[in-house]
Amino acid sequence: MTYYTAYVLNDKKRETLLDIFEPAFSKVLAHHITLIFNAQSDTPIPPIESVEITHFVTDNNGIEALVVSVNGESIREDGSYYHITWSLDPEAALPAYIKNHNNDDTHYNPKHANDLIKLALSDNCPDEFSVTALDCKLPVDTLKGEVLELSETPDAPTPSQPKSPKP
Image (cartoon, rainbow, N blue to C red; front, side, top):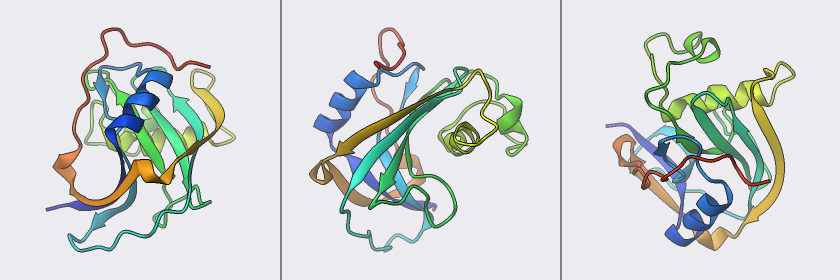
């Protein structure tokens, strides 16, 4: 079994954020911030002091994410950015920037948010991407540290009409 540690959004904060950042794609995740991927089932969860949403990013093709800092850090120990995968289009074909790193994949899945964010926040950000800098603190009492199995990321109800994030 594959486990990961995460800070999971509580339902109330999740709904508030979904109202602010209306998902653009059919599969809504908006569930957690991954801390450690490939963790053990008994991996301790580090204390959470602060979480801030720093960017909203999308490739406008099939995936969007909120980039966050955790306890003042934006990058996890494995080199990936802390983030919340917001929504994706599981039917959309992967663009080259993802295919180049994930040769077996043909359609979007949550792990592709890492490729999106890395390119979106680089000096080589494609013109078709949208990147919005934000300064939004999340109250730490709206997040709960958990060890989850990879298959435990629930889908949210599909929005009736996908929209762009509110400014």
